[in-house]
Picture (cartoon, rainbow, N blue to C red):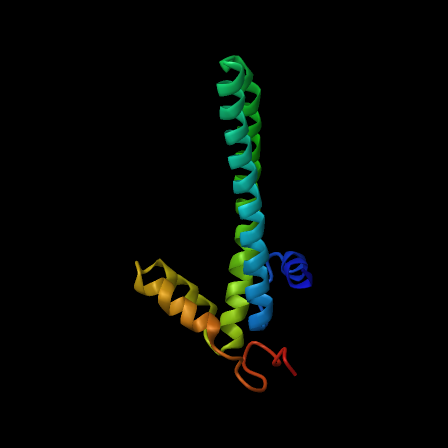
Length: 138
C-alpha cells in the first residue's frame, strides 16, 4: 500500500527512478480499485434485476440505475485521475532499467508494443547510478 501512496504523492514526477516493486505494487492496487468498482456495479445491477424480478415493480430499478451510473462515473473519474501517476511511475520504471521514458510510446504499437513494454518493465534495475539518478535499491 505504501508504494501506491508513494506514486500518488509523486503525481506528475517523471524524473528519477522507480524500482520494480514500486511499479508493480502500484499496478496491483490500481487494478484492485478498478475491480472493486466493477464488482460494486455488478452487485448493484444484479440486485436491481433480482428486485424487479421478485417484486415485479420495474420502477424500483430507477434509483438503482442512478446509483450504477454514479459508481461508473466514480470509476471513470478515478481512472482519469490515475492516468498521470500511472504514466509517471512507468517512465520512472523505464529510467530505472536504463531506458528513456519516451519508450512508453512503444505501447502504442498494436500487440508488439505492449509485450515489449512488459519485458522492459520486468527488467532488473541498472546497477549503480545512471543519467536519471542513483539506484533506488542501494
